[in-house]
Amino acid sequence: MRTVIQRVKEASVTVEGEIIGEIKNGLLVLVGIEEVDSKQDIEWLSGKIVNLRIFEDEQGVMNKCVKEIDGEILIVSQFTLHASTKKGNRPSYIRAAKPDFAIPMYEKFISQVESDLGKKVETGSFGADMKVALLNDGPVTIIIDSQNKE
Image (cartoon, rainbow, N blue to C red):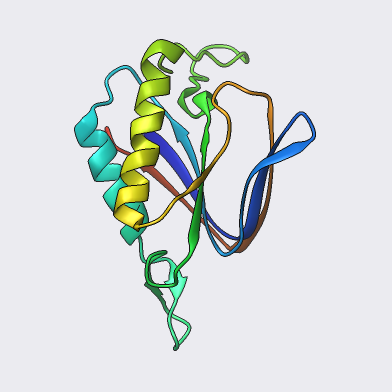
C-alpha cells in the first residue's frame, strides 16, 4: 500500500456536486493498493498513520500525532499512486490492484484506521470521479509505502 499523507486544516471530497466526506484539523490520506498488499500491510500502515508525530506541540515542535490532538482523518482511494512512468509519457497503472481485490482491502484499511484512531473516519467513494479540496497545513506531506517500510 502506498499513501500520501497531508496535514490539513480542512479537506473534503465531492462526488457529482455533493460533499460525501469532510474533515477539519487532521490528515488527508490518499491510498493506493497493490495485489501484493496484505492484512499485515494494513495493520502496519494504519499504526504508522495514526501515530505519526507531525502536529505541533506547545513549543511549536512537530511532536504530536493525530490522536493526541483529537484530529480527524479523511481516506481517499487513489490507484494513480501506483503509476509507472518508466517508459514513455503515458503512465501505466499495471501495479494498481483491480477493484475485486482493492475494494475489500480499502474497506479493511478504513476499519483498521478507525479502530486505531478510536473514532470514525471520513472517506471518498472508491472508483468515483472525486473532487478533493484541501487546505494543506505547513505544508506537511509524507509518503509511506508499506512494501518499502519507509
